[in-house]
Image 1 (cartoon, one colour):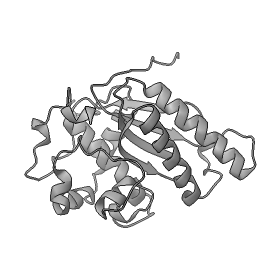
Image 2 (cartoon, rainbow, N blue to C red):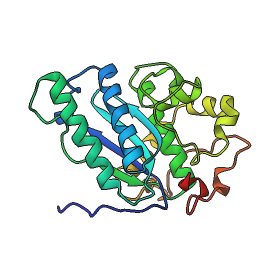
Image 3 (cartoon, rainbow, N blue to C red):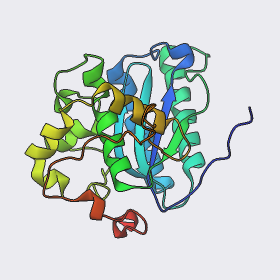
Image 4 (cartoon, rainbow, N blue to C red):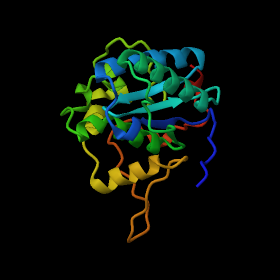
Length: 231
């Protein structure tokens, strides 16, 4: 099956995932991989004007959420994957490719999609028992945001307006797990070039996770032409 063409846009954020070759662990430990990726995020933020929303490093893959004001998702990912590969090869003294293939991206065109995708990737370390609470995982931008730690790349919170101002309720919601059907629906949606929830097999209704209980109403937030995009 031919690969679907890349969707390039500056109107909506992306979720991107890239996996290690054969789903093996990366050749270097997470602390070294984290530093390598920080350099790549800093580079694409400066050179390609990428607006980073979230980044989570796992043992054999990473999740990235970002906006692309220059409509250049392909160039951004080219630099991240190319430069990280070269740096890993240098440090690990190997010539092998570290990635199993091209990155996979999904466009998040509605506020609830962005919020649920954000929660899904931030919860990744908890789901595989790397930590008990989302804020405790050190290889996640949310850890830095939660503890107000300095981070070398500006983390753009425009996609999640005011949520970090109600940290307790937001954090509580992030730490409340999805049920199996909800997690499967989001996973299915992130496999598509444009996100779409899975349907219930019996009733043919979209399986959408329950809304977060907060004074902030994401449904009233328009992602398209968001003024924060140009910060």
